[in-house]
Length: 495
Image (cartoon, rainbow, N blue to C red; front, side):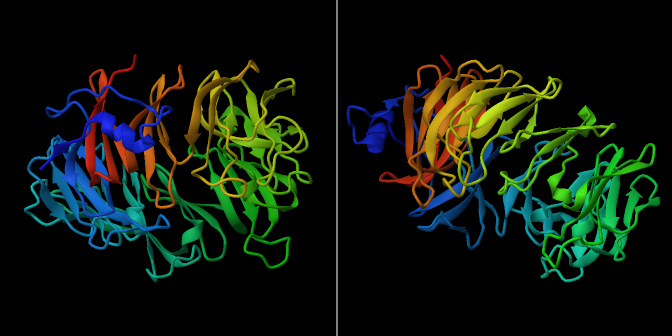
């Protein structure tokens, strides 16, 4: 039976009712209870992943060991009503639950090694295989033309060089009754050379020729010979590739000449030098007229990042010791830079911004950290070095909002972590703190204006939220002195 727990004893469990304990929350009413309600009782030390769909909560129990590794022998999927009523066993061997926009409200799941199945919400009928998938974890690519998958010749061989076939699965008209049909598009190609687009498949032949297959008419075009690796823009405008002839000795990551081609004009140019790697370049910004080059991340004192302007290919050398931040291009032709070599901060502020028009640099934030959010005017920075040399992914630090115009940063929270920090609304965060090796943590609601921490629950391993008018329903899995289970609570509206 569902049983309630009041907020005050729960807050005391988090902090032993000390004077500096986090402030308890005034929870709203849910299922007749003004506080957390356990809707599912789990076994000792169990936790669960949860999904809400069509008025029911679906959950997949699992167990963490002392080192934080999880296991779920039968992978049994269950469901219950929103207040814990009418529990049902749905199916076994489920990897995860998923929904697809094409079929809103339809309960689907992945059975790894089998495919995407439709499930009976009543748990009476067995899972129906709608789309078989060969890739582990049902990692397929959905397009308007069908579902792209790779079928390895040896399913047990997970090496990226293993040969196999690119196939197209048809989209079932009704996945509750129909099943996808399979068409082989490209046989006998290495897995590592296959790239999927919305209308195309690019692949490398065994003789290192880059090919493009058009899904609309199945036409095939040879783009470039002697290719080791490559990248293509979604609009088919630009091709970036590394020559198949290595310029270094035997290596898992060989170097070679990297070139850029405008497929519209067929103009090509070599970039960098003879000992280059495709992975150092990114086409993500090329629609904005920039091509970033990132040197060896752990040798920043001897390797310089660079930003090319396209199509002229003149360039800006990034100041020595700085690195182009991931997703660092801003809307006003400025770029975020970081000074950190993966081991320690280098001389100067950790975060700054480079104006690509006049090459001026504005310092933003001194302490080494991680960017968790970004908007047009600021970034949210967790003042903890990136995992996993100087810090672990559960380490805690201050959370700051850093304006992009160089004005002073504003403290948002005194404690947060990369592992468990979610924004609930513009002024509140859900933060998992004091994370133990078995991944259990204390879940708090943090007000970013007052920096107040409000206790929600202890021993939490996972959570999810769903809007409910001006309030939010929080579902979380926890194991503590009160037992193991899935709990739901209505959070108060923002002040």
